[in-house]
Length: 148
Image 1 (cartoon, one colour):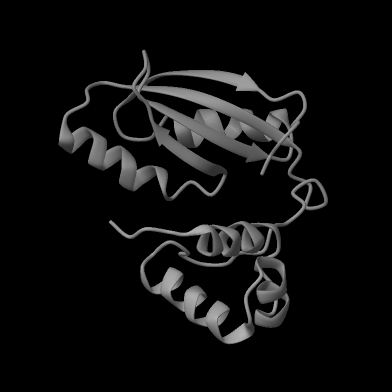
Image 2 (cartoon, helix red, strand yellow):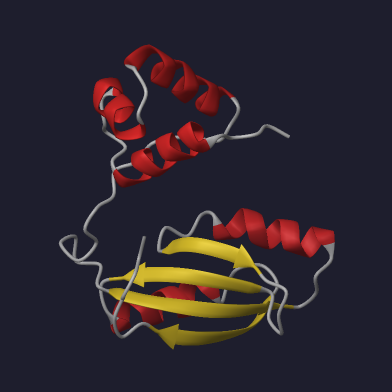
Protein backbone atom coordinates (compact mmCIF):
# COMPACT_ATOMS: atom_id res chain seq x y z
CA UNK A 1 0.00 0.00 0.00
CA UNK A 2 1.34 3.38 -1.00
CA UNK A 3 0.96 6.09 1.59
CA UNK A 4 0.06 9.64 0.73
CA UNK A 5 1.11 12.63 2.79
CA UNK A 6 -0.58 16.01 3.02
CA UNK A 7 1.26 17.35 -0.06
CA UNK A 8 0.16 14.38 -2.18
CA UNK A 9 -3.44 14.81 -1.03
CA UNK A 10 -3.24 18.56 -1.70
CA UNK A 11 -1.98 17.92 -5.24
CA UNK A 12 -4.85 15.53 -5.91
CA UNK A 13 -7.42 17.96 -4.48
CA UNK A 14 -6.02 20.90 -6.45
CA UNK A 15 -6.06 18.94 -9.71
CA UNK A 16 -9.64 17.84 -9.10
CA UNK A 17 -10.60 21.52 -9.00
CA UNK A 18 -8.41 22.53 -11.94
CA UNK A 19 -6.79 19.78 -13.98
CA UNK A 20 -5.17 22.34 -16.27
CA UNK A 21 -2.98 23.93 -13.58
CA UNK A 22 0.60 24.48 -14.56
CA UNK A 23 3.26 22.90 -12.37
CA UNK A 24 4.16 26.36 -11.07
CA UNK A 25 0.57 27.18 -10.12
CA UNK A 26 0.04 23.73 -8.65
CA UNK A 27 3.24 24.00 -6.60
CA UNK A 28 2.11 27.39 -5.25
CA UNK A 29 -1.31 25.96 -4.28
CA UNK A 30 0.19 23.04 -2.35
CA UNK A 31 3.16 24.82 -0.76
CA UNK A 32 6.02 23.19 -2.69
CA UNK A 33 8.57 24.38 -5.20
CA UNK A 34 8.09 23.29 -8.82
CA UNK A 35 10.57 20.41 -8.99
CA UNK A 36 9.35 18.48 -5.92
CA UNK A 37 5.76 19.10 -7.02
CA UNK A 38 6.50 17.73 -10.49
CA UNK A 39 8.23 14.66 -9.00
CA UNK A 40 5.26 14.00 -6.72
CA UNK A 41 2.80 14.46 -9.57
CA UNK A 42 4.68 11.96 -11.74
CA UNK A 43 4.76 9.47 -8.84
CA UNK A 44 1.02 9.89 -8.27
CA UNK A 45 0.43 9.19 -11.97
CA UNK A 46 2.88 6.26 -12.12
CA UNK A 47 1.33 4.64 -9.04
CA UNK A 48 -2.20 5.00 -10.41
CA UNK A 49 -3.56 7.55 -7.95
CA UNK A 50 -4.12 9.93 -10.88
CA UNK A 51 -5.43 7.94 -13.81
CA UNK A 52 -6.12 10.66 -16.37
CA UNK A 53 -7.47 14.10 -17.17
CA UNK A 54 -10.80 15.01 -18.74
CA UNK A 55 -12.73 18.05 -19.89
CA UNK A 56 -15.96 18.57 -17.98
CA UNK A 57 -18.66 19.74 -20.35
CA UNK A 58 -21.95 21.52 -19.79
CA UNK A 59 -24.43 18.81 -20.77
CA UNK A 60 -27.32 21.30 -20.79
CA UNK A 61 -25.60 23.38 -23.47
CA UNK A 62 -25.23 20.16 -25.47
CA UNK A 63 -28.98 19.61 -25.21
CA UNK A 64 -28.72 16.67 -22.81
CA UNK A 65 -31.00 17.91 -20.03
CA UNK A 66 -32.78 14.69 -19.08
CA UNK A 67 -31.18 12.52 -16.39
CA UNK A 68 -32.66 9.28 -15.10
CA UNK A 69 -31.39 6.62 -12.76
CA UNK A 70 -32.41 3.11 -13.66
CA UNK A 71 -32.46 0.11 -11.37
CA UNK A 72 -31.76 -3.05 -13.36
CA UNK A 73 -32.48 -6.59 -12.22
CA UNK A 74 -30.90 -9.49 -14.10
CA UNK A 75 -32.14 -13.05 -14.49
CA UNK A 76 -29.22 -14.31 -12.39
CA UNK A 77 -25.97 -13.14 -10.90
CA UNK A 78 -23.72 -15.87 -12.25
CA UNK A 79 -20.29 -14.76 -13.43
CA UNK A 80 -21.25 -15.43 -17.04
CA UNK A 81 -24.45 -13.38 -16.78
CA UNK A 82 -22.69 -10.45 -15.09
CA UNK A 83 -19.86 -10.50 -17.64
CA UNK A 84 -22.31 -10.44 -20.56
CA UNK A 85 -24.20 -7.50 -19.08
CA UNK A 86 -21.00 -5.62 -18.20
CA UNK A 87 -19.70 -5.96 -21.75
CA UNK A 88 -22.97 -4.96 -23.40
CA UNK A 89 -23.69 -1.96 -21.17
CA UNK A 90 -20.48 -0.30 -22.34
CA UNK A 91 -21.89 0.00 -25.87
CA UNK A 92 -24.84 2.22 -24.84
CA UNK A 93 -23.62 5.81 -25.19
CA UNK A 94 -26.49 7.27 -23.16
CA UNK A 95 -25.44 5.33 -20.06
CA UNK A 96 -23.01 7.63 -18.25
CA UNK A 97 -22.46 5.40 -15.24
CA UNK A 98 -23.11 1.78 -14.36
CA UNK A 99 -22.72 0.42 -10.83
CA UNK A 100 -23.23 -3.10 -9.55
CA UNK A 101 -25.08 -2.88 -6.24
CA UNK A 102 -25.66 -4.92 -3.12
CA UNK A 103 -29.38 -4.25 -3.04
CA UNK A 104 -32.71 -5.71 -4.12
CA UNK A 105 -31.64 -4.97 -7.73
CA UNK A 106 -28.35 -5.72 -9.47
CA UNK A 107 -27.24 -2.50 -11.21
CA UNK A 108 -27.85 1.23 -10.99
CA UNK A 109 -27.43 3.16 -14.24
CA UNK A 110 -27.19 6.91 -14.78
CA UNK A 111 -28.72 7.66 -18.16
CA UNK A 112 -28.59 11.05 -19.92
CA UNK A 113 -30.72 11.98 -22.93
CA UNK A 114 -32.20 15.13 -24.45
CA UNK A 115 -35.76 14.56 -23.21
CA UNK A 116 -38.29 12.05 -21.91
CA UNK A 117 -39.14 10.75 -25.39
CA UNK A 118 -35.47 10.04 -26.08
CA UNK A 119 -35.11 8.36 -22.70
CA UNK A 120 -38.15 6.18 -23.39
CA UNK A 121 -36.55 5.04 -26.66
CA UNK A 122 -33.23 4.26 -24.96
CA UNK A 123 -35.01 2.30 -22.23
CA UNK A 124 -37.21 0.35 -24.62
CA UNK A 125 -34.73 -0.26 -27.43
CA UNK A 126 -31.38 -0.47 -25.66
CA UNK A 127 -31.48 -0.98 -21.88
CA UNK A 128 -34.34 -3.48 -21.85
CA UNK A 129 -32.57 -5.46 -24.57
CA UNK A 130 -29.26 -5.75 -22.73
CA UNK A 131 -28.39 -9.38 -21.92
CA UNK A 132 -30.32 -10.97 -19.04
CA UNK A 133 -32.35 -7.86 -18.08
CA UNK A 134 -35.66 -8.94 -16.55
CA UNK A 135 -36.79 -5.75 -14.81
CA UNK A 136 -36.06 -2.03 -14.75
CA UNK A 137 -37.28 0.81 -12.58
CA UNK A 138 -36.72 4.46 -13.49
CA UNK A 139 -36.17 7.49 -11.27
CA UNK A 140 -36.20 10.81 -13.13
CA UNK A 141 -34.02 13.64 -11.84
CA UNK A 142 -35.93 16.88 -11.27
CA UNK A 143 -32.86 18.97 -10.39
CA UNK A 144 -29.15 18.25 -9.97
CA UNK A 145 -27.98 19.87 -6.76
CA UNK A 146 -24.41 18.52 -6.76
CA UNK A 147 -22.94 16.76 -9.78
CA UNK A 148 -19.19 16.77 -9.01
